Image (cartoon, rainbow, N blue to C red; front, side):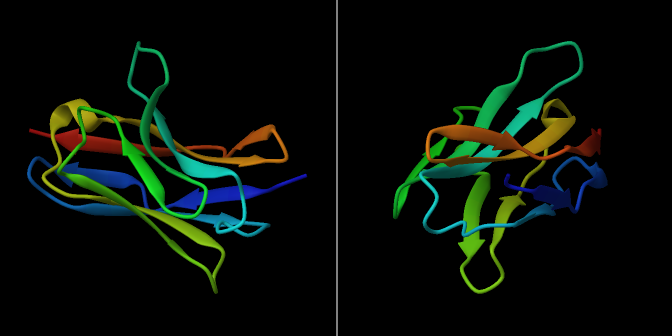
Length: 115
């Protein structure tokens, strides 16, 4: 069983910055896929950013150029750096990890962006 614990959510103003962290109970470097999803109010879950394998990154269209995914090998931690925040970025953000074809999600952290 893999445990994922997110932190760093909260309230930000439009144009501001937040960093989300996800502490994992297994390596975020050797997992098949690690990433972030979000669920905006009243909408379906959507991909925000992911790292596939060693270094292939993928971003949702709405966050390209604003958000950056990174990871710390020593701390087994995944990060999401969110710049130029917009009110439409308001959502619950979930950390995600795929290990041996099994998907795991964290409990989620709320991000609210005010205009």
